Image 1: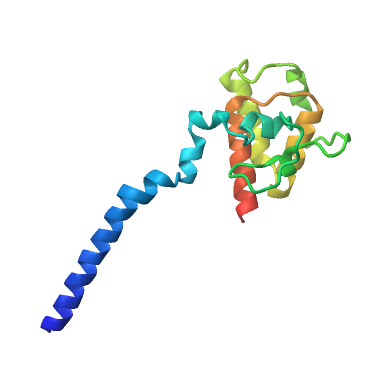
Image 2: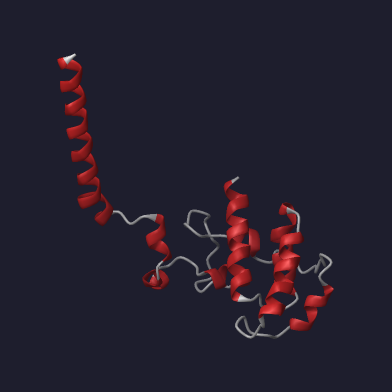
Length: 153
């Protein structure tokens, strides 16, 4: 019985030592995925959320798919055919800025987004881009989150 307690105590001490080394050494040297989402990362070479949704690329490169938040391959317009997803009423927002929407108008975009089938989300995003409609900021973030979840599954 004493032998088991000695082994258990040794495992606890080793576990605490490993935890402290992780917290004090490795986490400071290796940034986590959440650290890449901070405003300081705006100077990095990874595309911003706005560039991902709009399909703009500052350097003219094609996304390799290895970035933490790269959704360009699914959201950039690949063809010029506009497909409507029972959202013709959104055409009245052509030319508006992302921060110029009222909460009711933003909810209109959210209703359309939430009514889409999962396989239609990327196509709807391309359709919105081709129609020159700028998504409200909150909806754009929700769209990226949905696409990221679909990609992970």
